[in-house]
Image (cartoon, rainbow, N blue to C red; front, top):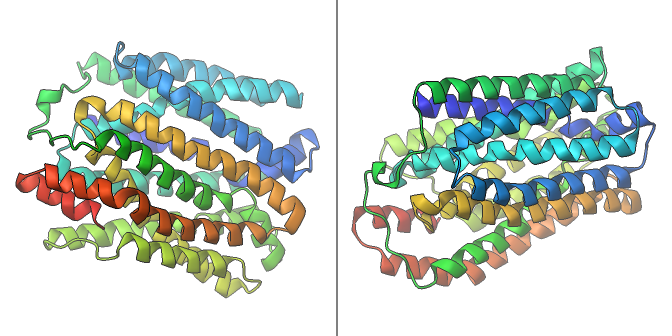
Length: 404
């Protein structure tokens, strides 16, 4: 029950936080009369920086305060600030209040390492797959609800939905605390901890650098994808745009089901990471097409590659550490991830202003190629050292998972 409620709480948070993501250009235009793509890019960059700097602080505080108790207070604060954002009409005040809201909302990311501490290492890949699909599928629902909000209401109404999601999270945490749920102890993980390799410390930094480039590339196309789709298709319909934006989420759900079937049969997904990156490059370039069927095909290919690559990289976060360090390790790698998102948010606005709506797809493809080159260069030695230091069945699983 604990794991299910935590994943459900994560889903609620992801759905509400995804509603406005495809429509920030429309939001700033309709609410504040700001048409500049650069302004949108700067806002998204500031949002990423805020979350990036907040999570390590929450992770450190969570060592002293039970995360479920901590979330009760942070989500109450986030809900109050969401309602405040709803009524604001001055753009500078909105910036300040919304950044404060994101500081408190960032605390829900602690649920990810919390859930991972509940799982054995040999179930990390499947659990990360479920969480990844929650994020992707939450993006589908969030984009759809955001599109409906723009079609039948105002974009600012989304902040009220965000506040409701915070109330739900507070209610779940209160229920779990009342039932006696607590932070899982290390000795509840029924396995022998993996031995540390000499390169384990530097491995997290190397993995972070790879993930920085990957996340920069993956998020580069997001802020202005809807405008690109509408300019190519000629369909200026928020609901349809939301469906197209959410295609990668639907593909991720399909990938999760197929991966689960493969594992039940004793196998494992066969694509190597570099192969998946090449598939992602193809998907990115196809999305830059001016033909709608080609663009949709590229969107689906990109969604498949994005899910599989994300799962493989995030498994490594927890394979390089121990249950006691999961929250700390995740917060550190999360800094690199958000540096990538931060750079993407800023670069997207600048590129669209200078080179047009299709330009982010080409730079993202170059970024995927760079990731394919960096992965063996930075991580091959680390992974080899981990495999040599480990022993037993659990190590055998790690060696297979990390090599893919």
